[in-house]
Image 1 (cartoon, helix red, strand yellow):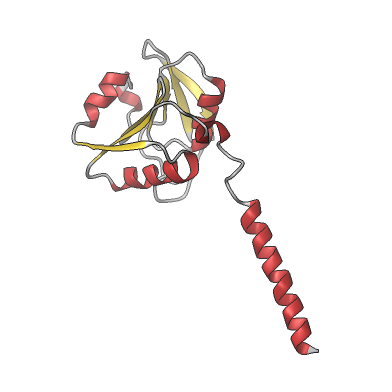
Image 2 (cartoon, rainbow, N blue to C red; image 1 turned 30 degrees about the vertical axis):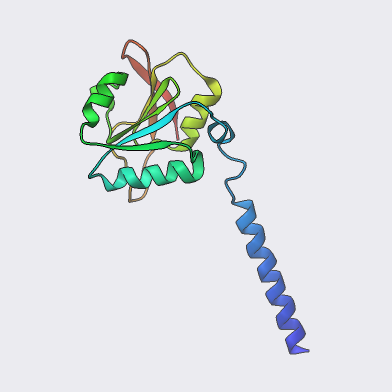
Amino acid sequence: MKNKILIAVAGLVLIGILFFVFRSSDDGKFVNLKSFNQEMTLYKSLSCGCCGVYAGYFKSKGNSDVEIIDTSDITSIKQKYGVPRELESCHTTIIGDYFVEGHIPLEAVEKLIEEQPDIAGIAMPGMPYGSPGMLGQKSEYFIIYAVNHDGSYEEFMRI
């Protein structure tokens, strides 16, 4: 009798675990990013560990087709695509005609691809704690800026 109860309890625990695993899956997230079929390139510094972690995050949750390029001159990439100096971070991703600057959560990239605004790109300056690729706890909103073609910018979203 005890064995039957233990097996029943173990079965319920297993079902609960499987439910949680499948429910928390990212399969339904980032649909536009996962199906994006234009060029995607992430430029990162050779020596930056957090950039590598962000690249892994992007590839595993966003789109595995992104090309990762290690470069010793990340500044020229930022200048080429018009990233304002005050919004710079440690890596730059080019997605189609847009730049994505920094440790931006994929929710913002998904919104960018879905809405396709007439802007040059989006940026989150610095390396905020708790953002994708960065250690620490998130302590405030991540503010992502929309950068216009003339270099001006305004808030795109908060996460």
